[in-house]
Image 1 (cartoon, rainbow, N blue to C red):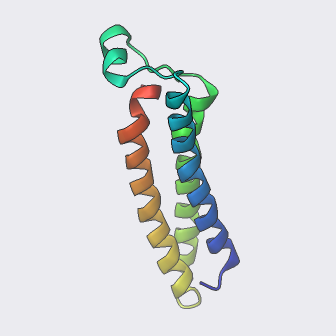
Image 2: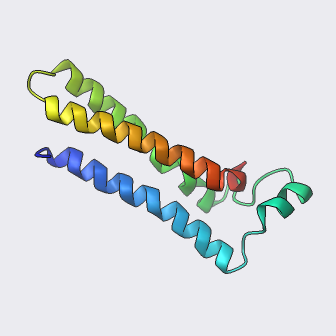
Image 3: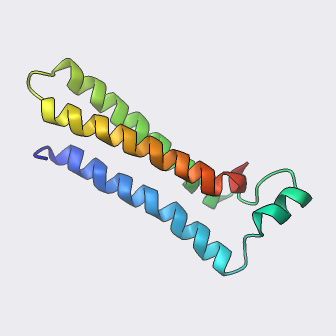
Length: 112
């Protein structure tokens, strides 16, 4: 991968993928997050709704997905010059969608 911007997007995606899980497990270990089953019985909205932690769950990866999508389309139109960049950006879009789905599956109840 020769394109430094694409390489940086991969690194940022990795960071934005790991940080929400770290916060989630840290809060759960410290007892600040209730058990999901108990929460669904007692409350209507997730404990992180409109909280800083809630904004860190999906928003960063959605923003990255938008940026990557724009760069991907830009590179597709210049396909003769940037075949590698288009391939890596397309792969990154798939990775970001998978991370987004994983975050929703594990932490979606917290932001409800």
